[in-house]
Image (cartoon, rainbow, N blue to C red; front, top):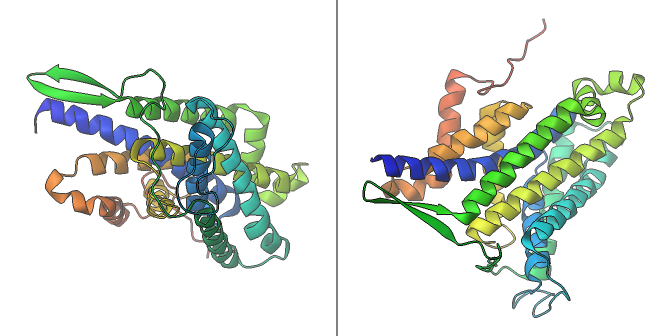
Length: 316
């Protein structure tokens, strides 16, 4: 493998890995505060992508209840991305209200909330399919304005292609990761979220409105999921209402690989899996979806708590 191929794979891996990281952070935030995996996160990922598409393009396809209809406006991609992420955040709030809060209020087993979130995920995806059908949507080529589709560099007679969407993904992901780190560590609300995640009872005694912060966590988680869905959709298209399922499974692999509940671990896990997929030889491209889980099995054999997870101390 020559140096150009290595650089190309690193670029591709960091680009897709940074999206995996953003998506997995949504899982991590909810798990940190409730100790439960939100299986509806993949559906929120899909809805966010479709909302952004609707705001940016304004036209719907040939199937579903909205077939042949158009919105009276279309927004520039940055505004549509922001709007789609906010709408996904509110869907995350809806998931908390429907799947988690009623069971938490009754002190139900966390496993029931997990199953409940699976049910809400199916309902959301079915509703989306009812509205827009199962056809594939693609963002138009001019969605990024006058920016070129790609930049081509020549090194040692080889071609290095840098797609504009890859640069946008890297920039957006980096900004979001830095903003989330600042929010969690430098703001009063972020510290309150950390206190709630550490011990909800103690946080409540300190005057923290635990329910409100749990709701806020679902909003942030949903917004991150919608953002990740849009970035994936802008790069590869929207392959139907169920296209978030495979990414949802991959997001689970990311958070386990990085260490359950660890925010830096989710980022590291996403980048590791993205680079692992990028360096997969072309002859084995049909195995791409399995790469995340092969890496997960191998790393868990050496570190059962994940790359940056903390080993649980068993009390006797």
